[in-house]
Image 1 (tube, one colour):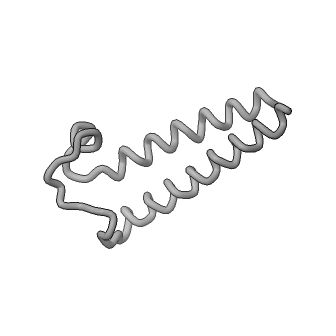
Image 2 (cartoon, helix red, strand yellow; image 1 turned 90 degrees about the vertical axis):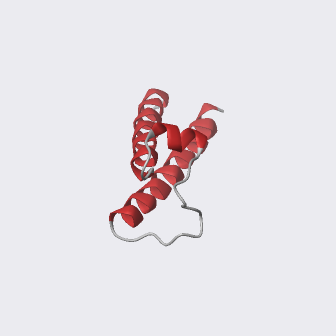
Length: 76
């Protein structure tokens, strides 16, 4: 069971990284890491595909945290 949780957490973390990088608009990795003049902020309205990517990212984050908590609980 412990091995399965490790595999699931690796898969979720890779998917989470991909989703976060897909959300970066108008720049690429440099803008994602160091900021830039993208003009975007937290208060910006998301629509369409951007909203879907954002919601999938939230779901993956919650799933990753749940798997991590489950792994700790089962290891005791």
